[in-house]
Structure formats: C-alpha cells, structure tokens
Length: 444
Image (cartoon, rainbow, N blue to C red):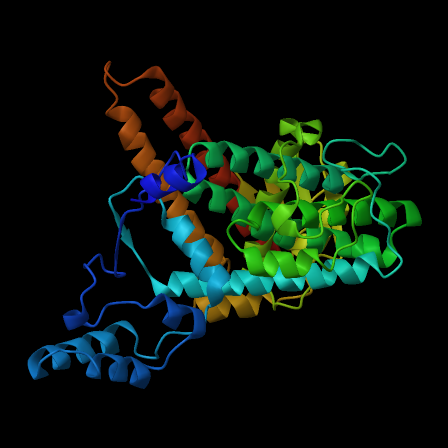
C-alpha cells in the first residue's frame, strides 16, 4: 500500500531496504503477554513508573480475576521497585545494542538503566572537557582526524586516543554498512567509556594542571576532536544528548552545519592508526589493572605507594600516565626491587612490584590471616600463599592437558598450552620471591 501510494504521488519507492528486528521478549526469554504481566511499555521505560502504577495499568485492562492476579505477581517479580526513568536515548541505544542475527531479543530493563548511567558518564566527561577547553578556546580550522596539526606537540597518550578514535570510526562505518548495529554500539560505547573516560581523561588531568602551554594546547585539540568525533558517531543512536552537548562545543573552522543531525558523519581517521602504539598502551592498561589489584589487596584506597616495574618493553614515555592511573607517588622502571614489595605479573611481559613496606605491618598481616606464628617463625604471607596455591593448581591442570596431547592435536594448540605453562611457572617464581621478601621483613 505504501509503495503504491509513493509511486502514484512521488513516482519513486519510499525505501529499497527493510530491516526486520527480532521478536522482543522479556528478560527471561518469555514472550510478552498481558496475562503474565511482563509486557513493557516503552513510555514506562522512558519516563519511569512505580510498581503501583504498573498494577493499575493491568487493572484497567480486560483480564479476569485469575489472570489479573497472575499478571500482578509477574510484575512484582520482574519490577519489585518499578521501572526507573531511563530516557529515550538510553532505550534507543539499548535496543540497537541488542540487535544481532538471533531470532529473539530478551529485553532487560536493568541493561537499559545501565545505558542511562552511561549518558551521565558522557555528560560529565563533556562537562570536564569544556572546563579544560575554557571559554577562550578556538577549535582547529580543519578536522584533526584527516589533517595533522604540525604545530601541535602531541604526546604519546594524545596519539593513542586519536588512534582509538580512528578505530571507532572505522569499526562503526563498517558495521553500519553491514547492518551490524550491535557492533556499532559496542565500538562507540568502548571508545567513550574505556578509552576516553577511563584512560585519556584521567591521564591528561596532570597535563591540564601542571603541563607546559604546548602540552596543554595539544591536549585541548585532542580532547576537542575526540568529543566532536564521539558525539557525531553516537548521534544516530542517542540523538538528544549528543545534540545538546554538540551545541555547546566550539565549531571547526570548516563546519557550516547548524545542527548535528545534518552535520557530516565521521568517515576516516586512518592518519592516526598505529597498531604498535596500541599494543604498548594495552600493556600499560594491563599493568595498571595489576598494580591496582595488588594495591587494593594490601593497602587503603587512599594510599599512594611507589611502584617498580621490571620489563623489557619500551614504556619510558608512559610513566607519568601509569602513575596517574595507578595512583602512585613514584613509578620506577627497571630499577632494583627493594624489600617489602607485593608483586603481580602481566603474563611474561612485566612484573609489577608495589612497595608496601612502611604502609603495612607484615607481622600483623601474617597474624591476621594465618594465625599464631610460634610454630613456624616464617609463615607464608597468607594472600600470596593463597594466590600461589591457585597458580599451582593451574600449572597442574595445564601439565595434565599437555600430557594428554595426541598426534591429532594441532601444533598451534600444543604451542599455546606450552606457552601458558611457561607463563604460570614464571608467575610462581615471582610469587615465591615476594613471599621471601615478606619473610625478610619480619626479621627487620
């Protein structure tokens, strides 16, 4: 009917392609039914609704008393606190993130609420960025993603986030062409949350507060470009918040669009692609994760210990970044390891030693987690010993797997298991060293 009217009135087809979405079910995969009380009204997700109001909605329907009682029980089970206000953008983004090649879509309101919190994260990131740009900031006269500014002194972390922006642009455009909407939303979400917010904003705070003017200028241009790219990428999925934030940004010298809805979509950032740099920063992120884990195990959250890294990787230009992300007063690269460090490993690429001497009492820690030490004057440090037992278990399992290898097992699988065994054995040596260090501390 629509096609006929369009051809008759406009002499053209209204569309040439149609996207069919899967059946939307509730969070448990059950088909939505009013009698079960699991029907989700999109307006209830957008504006929020209490459990009592949900009950009233089914009370005003056509259900008999038995079905009505069942529906109310179902609502109480699914939404004991009602449905929180999530907004249009979060709902739209969530629905797109669910779109896979599967025939069913299990809609979980908690996931949509998570995307509402993601909107808050975007808002706060933009607020921080605009504060750092300042009222006097002037955007570059050309798109930084397609044309480098030769005068700007970009740091390693600046180049990395521009590389990540380029990857997000490439992944999003490729996925859009193939109607892989879940991959689109994943690429954009990861860029905003894990790259821009979790790493770059934290790593550049020191630059904005203590850096030179050249460093600040490069960081501002980088931050502005990432915001502009990120908002353009996410606009089809979150049109309202992206438009609101984009209108607050200064305009590129070449930008003439009055609104984000008619502005050009990012197409390329190949100029900044650098896989070697990404590998180095990925190692940094693994180091930060390990150091934080070790730090949280032994120290209070506000403690700022010294950290010692032992690695053959080239990381000297990222020391300040690691200090900021870990929360360390000083990071030492490939220096002698003092007594009193707790240790973690990043595969076989790096050892992370967190200095806890002077920040914890080793004897008190041993007594607290092991018990009376009169029987053994050198009991193992409990947490390290527990970790060692876990690693030993994995070593034994890996050895058993290798022993069961037959001629039918592919060579790459055998090699992977051998590499895994080697890494685990290296980790045991590292843990033993840490335990020995703690034992020495009890003598001092």
